[in-house]
Image 1: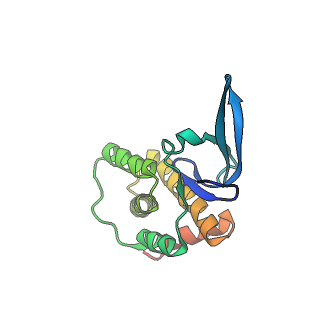
Image 2: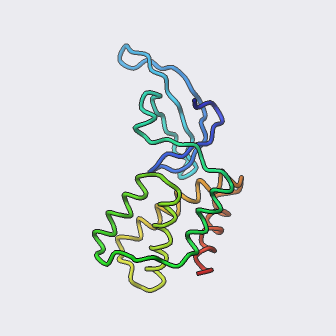
Length: 160
C-alpha cells in the first residue's frame, strides 16, 4: 500500500513522491485519496485509491534496473518503423504502458532519427516526453537534481 514518502511512477505524468494519504468527502461519499507531488512541472496529482490500478501506478525501479534500462539508450537501434504515423502510435503506446524499458527504447530510436536528420517535427514532442519521464524517475532513484538526470540521459546518446 502507498504511504507518505513512497516514490512512485505514474505513466504520462512521471515519477513523484506521495505527499498525503487522506479521506475526502465527494458528493456525500467518503473516498481515500493519495496526493502525489510529481517531479515534472511540480504538478500535484490526487488519485482515489480505488483508481490506482487504472492509473497504472508502480513503484520506481531499483538502481540496478535503472542502469540496465538506461543502457538501452546507448545501444544501436534495432529496426525502426519507416512510416512515421505508425511509429508515432507505437512510441505513444510504449510511453503509455509506463515501463522504463519501453521509454528507453523510444528515446534510443528517436535520438537515432534525430542524429540522422530523419525525425519529423511532430515526434519531437514524444522525444521530450520520454526524456522527461525517464529523467524524473532517474532523479528519484539516484537522488539527484532533474538537471543532472537530463545530463546523464543525454550523455548516453553521445556514446552511441
